[in-house]
Amino acid sequence: MTKIELITEINAPIELCFDLSLNVELHQQSTSKTKEFVLEGRKKGIFEEGEVVTWRAKHFGIWQNLTGKIVKVESPNYFIDEMLKGAFKSLKHLHTFEYKDGVTIMKDVLEYETPYGIFGKMFDKLILTNYMKNFLKERNSFLKKAAESELHKKFIVK
Image (tube, rainbow, N blue to C red; front, side, top):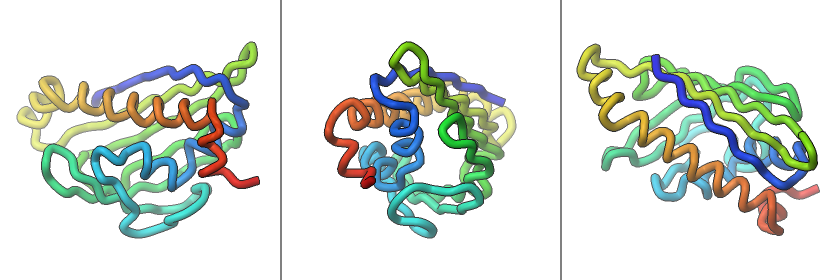
């Protein structure tokens, strides 16, 4: 099992960061490099606990589907999503948020397991772990930019 942990500091309120992290349109825009879009499930707004979504994206030149479920939401502190069906043997993503000294600290803990035995483990070690880290960093960078600017108004309407 591979575990990736990332911390992103955001100069914005915790509630805004939390809502942006669960926002469908922001997710799609932040993953535009992989042309990610919703194939089945909520296409607008903020995901809620229990919702299932199937994403379609191009990774390594191959179109792939990943069906995930938002298994737990504790606003604005954390949420967990898990893969139900997709290219991984298993995948679980914990998103936590803490507000400290005027800054939201967003932490990602992504745990996944690759299929295909030793070949999957080699691919993970040589390529996939760095790919996944960079994928999350790009998404978090976009979220940070949105939260710290007027861009968030495009995604969150209050």
